[in-house]
Length: 457
Ligand SMILES: *Cc1c(COP(=O)(O)O)cnc(C)c1O
Image (cartoon, rainbow, N blue to C red):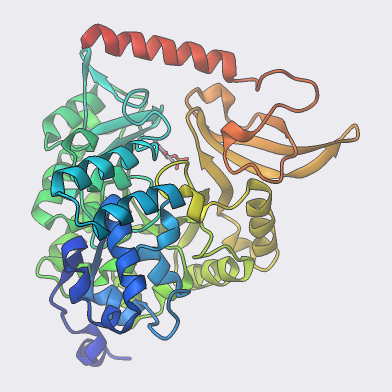
């Protein structure tokens, strides 16, 4: 089809961005047809967990004839089960009683603190130090990759209900990682020759204007940062706002920036977050993917496995096949992290592995680049390799895909078979061991880092 004709189809016309947050829940038109009780539940849950959804998601992605089961509805709209019953009841009662704002706020804050807002050492262990000073808008957990949280990129076009960074979006400044300091980033990178990858993350860096993104990324072209070869951008914009690459005012500047980085010798990897094939079916999303790929950037895909959204092998198989067809590279299947609404979304590790395996058996090798199911846990990314039996003992075979210590990577280790475990800390060493092989060393590393941070404080 010819380009001009494509651009004239209504689906590819510019769409004004319109966003709804907790305060505007009642204004969302299709919700008004839902029962009062359901709407009250959403009000309660969105007091605690962040809520933000835009007109494209509401009008194009959600099947309103399939509520509440629709996966994109579950992905973006609060559900009663996302709070534990005691937390739900406590907040609901305060709202029914029209309790004073301060009282509600304090109760909400107390609940949030019980939801493990900062899993996996994000506030301390991952914090890089520059000349002894912590750099709050960055994380450096694995030797070759630095995470950077540009301050203008700390929201998203919509929020995912399961997001492990939910605590960043509930308005508490202490909970935010963000920095507006490109200079300190570049200085840190210059002093760390072992870093080959910079991962821009958030929030969603693609909410930023092209000119801001350029400010952060162009500096990477200087000769002293030649060792930073790969620029990754973690984003859900292909799902939540594909207009970013097609009709937004600076769509062309964004694409030009990627072309410039690639022409200068960098690899640009767009780490796209897709939970469900339903996110890739609109013409605007297809066009955004096509344009991004045309810059020379690679698109790699990742997502957690989630109850109520994608806990189904057929769905994963269909999603991976569609991604490969569209030229994207499946990268990770994650395990839902131990934070926020985990109890609502979690899938036991054994079942997660069964879904992964079942999906893998239905797809060609080009789709089998997705590793997982992988837990981004404190010591590293731990993959469940499978269930097997060793000397009559049923075990889970595990390996580090990534480790705080490079030496841990790819070493197989074994946990007692446990059908209900949903996270690494539920697992116990198998085969008569009393601890996993990395535990003593990890405890030492933690002590060392905490002492460094304490000395600075
Ligand atoms: C996943 C992750 C990375 C990247 O790991 P790769 O295996 O190279 O994709 C880097 N830092 C953190 C904190 C991560 O969780």
